[in-house]
Length: 245
Image (tube, rainbow, N blue to C red; front, side, top):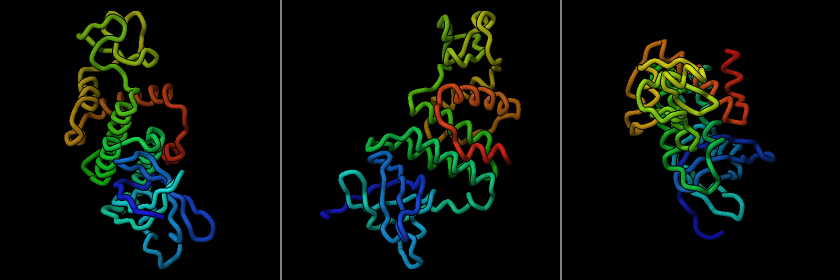
């Protein structure tokens, strides 16, 4: 089958194939979203048994085929087992995987997306962070990578840079006080606006370095719920389970 290649990434989903095999969707830094077949991965003595589950992050040694890849060896660096210790946190994690799968492009470099996913899952494992805030940070930053994020630094109607206090979902961003009085929208205080601007513009290493008030989280939830409902055309199964909880 020729030489193998080494890719770094995370298993987004795994599906049983036949009696003992698995079909994986893997987000890789080097080639974006790829399909990987893991032969015999469901056998009890397989070296791929634990490495072919969702959240497994590491180095994938693969044979490259015409339309998919075949796993030769997987060296896992992090299984994210902490996520499974709490059912609600686990569903947040699965939602993060689903959203990455939605935005990832096949065979297109995805270093920033892979790094964002890893950092966000790490944040979920830390009790100091409110999972609701982690979710909104991840969503907004993923919108940035997908090129669909709202304009948070100027009025989308007149271009003003000051007195931005209303978020308009259909117009895709902030309105100044004058335009907000004409068009309406979601009232946004200065703390919430600064939080969203920080999420959009800050380096990844600073993304999970702050806390906000309950009022800011609630405003973020309203904005992100309405914005993503309008601009994302997929229902996420893990979100349905979170709502049920």
